[in-house]
Image (cartoon, rainbow, N blue to C red):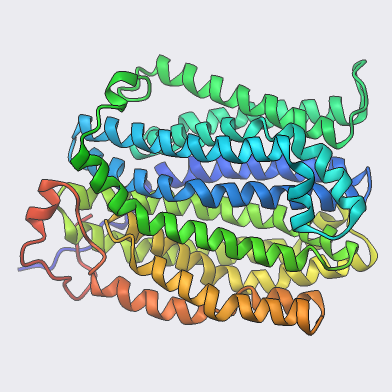
Length: 469
């Protein structure tokens, strides 16, 4: 009997249908951030550094709610594969509720206590003053950002990936136009500086949500506005949801706190280094944007097959997606290194800040390939029902290996910023080996649907690559 071959053509088309719109959406967002940085850079390196540190506070918020996104994707993608409408509606409702609770806490903190936030991230008073002005306004955007993310997760899990892309197009166009208008005072508006950039962000997020909702209604999306069905939870469902989400939440919160400690260390470097780090974070967003496309494709293409009771297809797709992601990320990083001079110059880097930014980019070009491999594997495990393995590895290695190295090199020994930065990635190679072993074991396939559970009876991963997808 002829051994079945893996249908690469159909598989790559399925990946592209999901990954390309998501990658384009994140690319647009990153492009908007780059334009922001270029405009703010004309105000000075202090402003660039301040806004960059404020972005780290929003990243902490991201860590607070992303555990619920991961849990929501796990349930929504598997229920989508099983064609369970009630399961999708309930999963979206509880995910939205939990995410919005986190966003309100962070939004109020930014609006009411901005100076306290900036005191945490840097000891430079000039940067604190600018960051306080920015946070006090941009805090109003946080609930809007999170609401938009919840909607995007639902649309992607139900394979409506183009609608969030159109929302991002509207948001980025609005943000760039309003930045030009409000930062510099064009078209009769007052020149508001970084406060103008913050206000532009708030308005752009509102435009994004409005665009997505209008398009979803026009497309007659079956789940987005079914509000009454979103909150029909049972104790059993809430318990199952929180049980799956708990490891992811612990992971994201502990990783978020760990990243905050790293940012506290980096925020006490010289001002040139802080400005270079702010620019680097923007370019890092470009790489992560492409990664997000593969991550979404992996979560959906693997999660739906697990939920539908097809573990062979889920297994065959998973490891191929990991290597596709790493290869593509390697090409993106190589392009950034080759084009570093015009990019960094446009973003206001010169002299010592340029040298530091280029060093950061070179280190990241190597580390990102392993890091994105680890991330996409972990996202795949979560969508398939295993929210524990990658979580435990990430937490243990960050707190026992990475953070001590960063703290000692930055706060105790006061070594150069590039040395401190290298320590931010020292755990990635070891974790990658352990994640690969787990990937090929197939033990991460843990369905939540009846169809998926039934298919796992006696299942073991087969050797070879010839599985139908």
